[in-house]
Every structure is written in C-alpha cells, then in structure tokens.
Amino acid sequence: MTAAAAPDGPPHGITGGGLLRRAFWRQRRRIALGMVLVSLHQLCEAMVPVVIGQVVDRAIAPSDRTALVVGIGAMVVLFAVLTYAWRFGARLIVAAEMNETHLLRVEVARRVLDPRDLDTDLRPGELLSLATSDADRAVDAVPAVSWVVAGVVGLVVSAVVLLRIDVLLGLVVLVGVPLVLGIVQLTTPLVARRTSDQQASLGRTAAAATDLVDGGRALRGLGAEEHAAQRFVASSQETLGLTLRAATWRGVSLGASTLLSGLFLAAVAATSGWFALQGRISIGELITVIGLAQFVAEPVALVGACLTAVAGALASARRLADLESLPHVAADGGAARGDGEPLTLRGLTYGSLTALDLDLARGELVGLVAHDQADTDALTTVLAGRARPVEVGGRVLVAGVPLTDLPVADVRASVLVEAHQVELFEGTVGDNLLLGRRDATAGQRDLALAASGADDVVASHPDGLERRLTDRGAGLSGGQRQRLGLARALLAEAPVLVLDEPTSAVDAVTEAQVADGLVDLRHADPDAATLVATHSPALLDRCDRVVVLAGGRVVAEGTHRHLLGTDPAYRSAVTR
Image 1 (cartoon, one colour):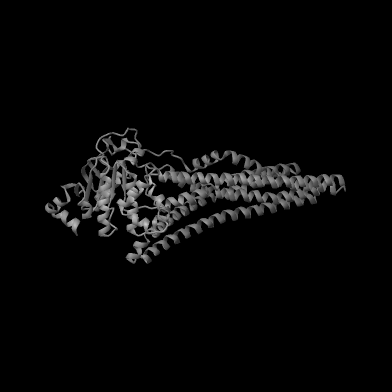
Image 2: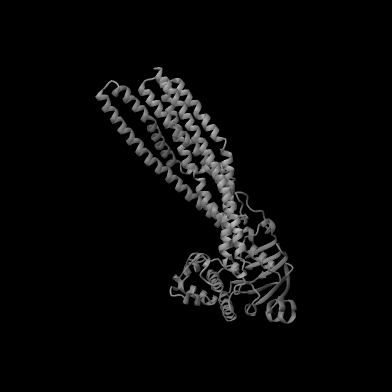
C-alpha cells in the first residue's frame, strides 16, 4: 500500500439532533426519575388552587370545622410533596446535565488528542470553545426538555380540572395554550441560527486570543502589539454584536411568551368571573379557576422559554456533531512491525517535495539541509502523520512496512518527530520530561538531560525537576524550552528520531555541547536511527552523513566537510 491511501470516513455521521438524543439515552435513568418528580411537583402546584377551592366550598361556606381541618391537613401534605419532589427532581436533572457535559467535553478532548489526528482547519481556540461553551449550551436541552414535560403535565391537569368545572373554560385553556406555544415557536428557528452564528464567532475570537497570547513575545519583538490588539478587538466586537443579536431574539421569544401568557391569563380570569356572577360556577370554583389561570401562566412561560433553550442547544449540538463526524488524517492499519531498515522514502511527494528518496539505517545519524524550509516542513509533516494520505504520493516504509499499513500506535512508537516549536505543558519539569516514557529511570532521565544540555535548566532553579511550569513553558527562555523538548525526545528512545533545528535557540558553546551529547547518546544504541534537519555546522560536522534537499528532492550527499569543499550552495547555506 502506498502513502496515498484514503483516510477513514466520518466515524458516526451523527447529527445535532442525534447527539441530543444520545445525551438523553445516556442519562435516561436520572432524567426519567427527575422528570417524574418535577412533573409531580407541577401536578401538586396545579392542585393547590383546587384544594383551596374545595376548602372554601366544603368547609368555610358551610362552617364545617372537620372539613376545614381535613383541608388544612391536605394542604400541608400537598406542599410537603411538591417541595421535596422539586428538590430531588431538580437535583437529578442537574446531575444528568453535569454528567453529560463532562462526557461531551471528554469526547471532544479524545477526538482532538486522537493520535490519528483530525482532518480539520479549526484552530485551538475554536476547539476550546467547542469543548467548553458549546458543550455547556448543548446540554441545556436536558433540563429544558424536563421542564417542558413537567409544564405540559401541569397544563393537562389544569385543563382537566377546568373541563370538570366548566367545559367552555376547559376549551379556552386547551385551545389557548397550543396557540400561545405555536406563536412562540415561530421565533425558534431564528434563535437557533443566531445562537449558531454567535458560537462560531465566539470560537474564532477564542482562537484569536490564543494566538495573541502564544505570540506575545514575537509581537513585542516586532512592535506589532497594537496591530494584533486591533485585530482581536475587531473579532471581539463582531462576537459582541452577534451575542447581542442572539440575546435580543431570545429576549423577543421570551417576551412574546410572557406577554401572550399574561393575555391568556386575563382572558380566563374575565370569563370565569362572568360565570361566577351568573351563578354558573361556585365561589370555590371561581377561586380554583383564578388560581389555575395564574398557575397556567407559569408552565406556559416555562414551556416557551425551554423551547427557546432547546433551539440554542440544538445549534451547539450541531457544531459538536460536525466535529465528531470529522474524518481522521491517518489510517489505522493492521500490519505487524517489520524488521527492515528503520526508515525508507521512495519517490515521496507532498507539498514542496517532488520525488524524495531517502534511506535511514540502524545506528545512523543523518543531517538534513534544505535550501527551502518548506521541504523540511513537508517532510516532518508526513513523518509525524499529520499529512492527509490522499495528498501524499510515493512510499514511506517504517521498518520495511508501509506507514499506512501499520497501526497508529506502532507508528507513534517507531517514529518520533520533535517539532521546531517545542510544546511544554503546565506541570513540573519532571512531568514534562516523562510524557513520552513514564517508566524511565532516574539514570536514563539524567543521561537525556545531560545530552540535551538541559541539566543546567534543572540545576538553575531551587525546585529542580519539581519546578512548576506555566502553560507552554512561558517562564522559560526559548533555548531552555528547546533543550527540555530535546531531552524529552531523547528520553523516549524512539527507534527513529526526527529533529527539526534542535539547537537554533542556544548559543554556540551550548550548541557544541548538545551536538556531542546528542551524537553520543543516539550512537550508544546500535539500532537507533536519527534524522536532524539543521543548518548548524556543529551538528552537521558530527553527523555520519548529510543529505541536501533542493526543489523537493535530494541533490547532494556526503559528509559535512566533503560538502563544504565541493558544494558552494551548501557552504553558503550553513556558514552564513
């Protein structure tokens, strides 16, 4: 199989609605019991005016003390039930919401951290927004639907009671409630669109903020802080505008629901009052009708607000579903590891690479000098497994087996690419060193630190390996980050190690020390193969051989000193 094998397709093809249905299924026990309890609360709320009306007609009007005591006892029981039903029902629904939010965040993180890599142009800030804001908003559907069910229960009970009191009053409720909800629903699609636009813009702004923080030092060096800040302000203003528009339409939807509920309440109250004057209903029934009319306004408004919340949740669920349905860049093959040469490239084409042939033997340390940085970037992208297979031509063999035929875990265990931009994580120096090899001994760790010149980074701080690092190692200099990254890569002891300008941020003395340590440590393992993309004469002079790339292919090969004497372009590239 060649490196141009097709990537895997969308893993689930899930939709926004499907994601919400999955959320309800996963939390079905909590949600079901929670719905029962909050529905019981609404039922008890609806029965409060009913019991009051019965007390008035059967105890107060005829002055029946026994009936009054029974009625008061019934009220006490009713309020106790509705109070505890709400407390425990709401607790279950909130627990379901929090658990599902956690699961969604973990799923987003798992997708982002999948070693096969996602085929997406989303920036880190946008992915962060999906894992936080969108996950929170999507799960808003869980309590919203629960409240809708409870509200409908309250409305149905109210309608039944009203029908028993007077058919016309019952019909007013049965016709009026769907009418109110239908009108409110007209704004739901627009709320969903506005919310989706808002969340997308929020993701872009988060990405801009992440870029601004990451590139702070470079921006200060270029004197471009003001321009970068203006771009962020413009993005933030766009997000603010979209947020206000989304909030406006949510407010319109909620306001329409409240207004129509109030008008509906007034109509029911006026009709029941007229019937009481005519003697069509009793005083107790009048109190019940007025009480139910006031109560009905709450579930009607609740249902309207929750439908609006569901619309917003669906918009975020669609964004999460789009992420979950993204294909992976790398294929996960099933071939076993071979015993061929560590790395073989034949006719590799990708990006600026046109027809690259390169062999890396066991125990060999090869320097790579590219006249165009794009060639190095393309090569490291392919070897790191970040290139779309459909864009890669030729053959990439790891231990004699095509790269795309191997399981991703075996590829990662066989080939380690340490990028020029070192990524350090919040935690201790020791934790960062052990990320790629948790079982490393103290002796192996010290050897890697010495070989990379990072031992003085540890020794220069009183906490040593326990020194706390901020995000991306912001408290370290560029050279310190680079040496810690190199130490981490060396400690992993990968069969094939690819380094991209590992000493570009250190001084000449340290560079020479690192060159000696790197060569000694990698040569100590007769099976280890190392490819170092660099323009450092100190490193190149210690390599077993050097290959030169130009126009996307190898144009020269030999030792560093031989190329210095025979290749003017090489001499110019490494001595400038």
